[in-house]
Image (cartoon, rainbow, N blue to C red; front, side, top):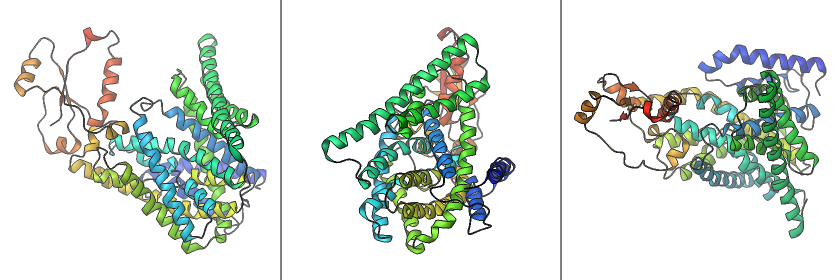
Length: 492
C-alpha cells in the first residue's frame, strides 16, 4: 500500500501529466492508457520499486470501485443524449448477441490455449468481452468518422458492461457455489437483478427529482449540484450493497433513471462526474500497471499472448461481422468497428471484482487479463489516430452507406424509405416564390469535394448531422409553423 506522500505524488502526476500531454496524445500514436499503464509498470516492484501494490490492496480496491460505479452511472446517463428511444434500442439488442459470441470464442481460446477449467474459461471470456471507452475516446470524438459509426461504438462501450456484468455475477455465484436449487437461485436472482437495480433506480429518480425541485425553489449553486451528482452515485452503490443487492447494477440503474425520466439537470451534474471519473480511471491504470508488472510472471507468456491474439484478431471481428451482416454499412465500416473493441480498464475492474469475490485461482485470471489488456492498450491506442485518418480519407474519396445515417439505429434500420422529390425547375420556381425553401446541401463528403457546383444560398450540412441541424432550426422558431420555411435537401 502506498504511503500518504506517495499517494499525493501519484495524484499530482496523473493530473499534471494528463494535462500537459493531452495535445501530444491527440496528434501522436499514443493514448493515456498507454502512458499511465506504462507509468505503473515503471513505478512497480519490477521497475523502480516506488509503488508496491498487491491485487488485494485496499487502495486499489477503493479506486477500482469508485471508477467502475462512476463509469456505469455516466454511461447510463449519456444514453439520453439522442439514443434512448425505441429505435435506439435496436443496436443495443443486436450488440447483445455479439457479446455472447465474443464470450464463447474467448472461452474456447482460454480453455485450449492456457488449459483453463470450464468456469475459468467462461469467467475470462466474460471479463475480456468488455470494451473500454477510455481507449475508444479518441475515435468517437473524431468528426471525420461518420456519426453513425461513432454512435455504434459509443453505445457499445456504454451498454456492453450491462450485458457482461450480470453474466459475470452469475458465473461468480456458480464458482463459489453461492446458490443451489430453484429456491436458492431465485433468491440470488432477486437480490442481484431486482433488488439492486430497483434501489439504484429509486435513488437516481428520487435524487434527481429532489435536486430539480430544490434548485427551482432555492437556487442551488453549480458547484454543489456537481457534488450532489457524485453523492447520488455513491448512495446508490452503498444502498444496494448494504441491503443485499448488487451496487454496480444499482449505479447503472441510477443513471438510467435520470436518462429515462429526462430530468432537467445542470450540465455540471455530468461535467464534474466525468472529470472525477477521468482522474480515477487514469490513477487506476497506474495502480493496475504496478500490479500487472508483478503478477504477469505467473502466466505462461506465449499461450497468453496467443489468447490475446484470439481476443483482438478473431473474437471481436468475427462477432461484429455477424452482427453487422445486414446493417447499412460498408465493409470498411465493418472492419473499423470490428477492430476498435479495445480491452482496457473495464476488463481489469471486472477481473478484480472476481478476485474480491473469493473465486479460486482468481489471481491467475487477473494476471491473464492484465497481459491481454496490455497488448490491447498498446495496439488499439497506437492505431487509433492512423486508422481513423485512413478511414476518414476513404470517406472523402467515396460515398459509403453509413454517411447517410446520424445514429447507430439508422444503420440497423436498413435503407431509408422513399422520399418525395422535386425537379430542378420546380426548385427554381419555389426559390423565386414568396416563401422560398431552405436548401440543405447534404451531399456526402466525397461528392461535395468532387463537384464544385453550389446552389446559391444553400446551407452545407453533413448528411449525418441533418437531425442536429433540424433540432437547432426548430429551437430557433419556438412559435411553430408560421415561421418555418419549407426545406429541400440536395443529396446527389
